[in-house]
Image 1 (cartoon, rainbow, N blue to C red):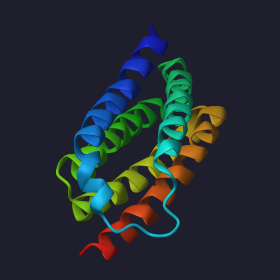
Image 2: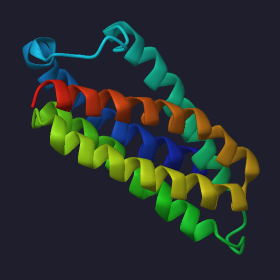
Image 3: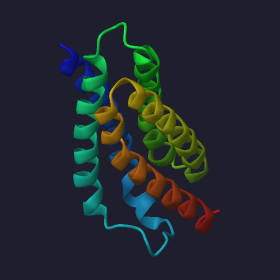
Length: 153
C-alpha cells in the first residue's frame, strides 16, 4: 500500500507538470531567449522519468518506516510540500508563461527539497541520499529558470 501511496503522490505532480508543460511548450517556450547551457528538449523527459522513479522509492522508504520513528511525520510533510511545489513550478513557468513566477516557485522548491532531504536523512539515510540527484537537477533548473527570466525580462 505504501508503494501505491508514494507513486500516487509523485505521479500526481508529474502529470500536473506534464500537462502544464505541454500546453505552454510550443510556441511560447520556443520563442524565449535561452542561455547557451540549455539542454536539448529531448533530455528533459528521460531525466525527469528517472528522478520521479527515485522519488517514488525514496518516499516509499520513508512511508514504510515505523510510525513511531522520530521525524517520520516531518519527512512525509516536507516530501508532500516539495511535490506540490514541483507541480506548481510547471504551472507557473509553462502554464502561466511566467519565468519570474517560475523562479519564485522553484526557489521555494529548492528550500522545501533541502528540508525534505534533511528530514529524510534522519528517518532513512538511503531515502535522503536518493533525493540528492533530484536536488542537483532542480538546482540546475533554478539556474536555467533564472537565466531565462533574465534574458527575457
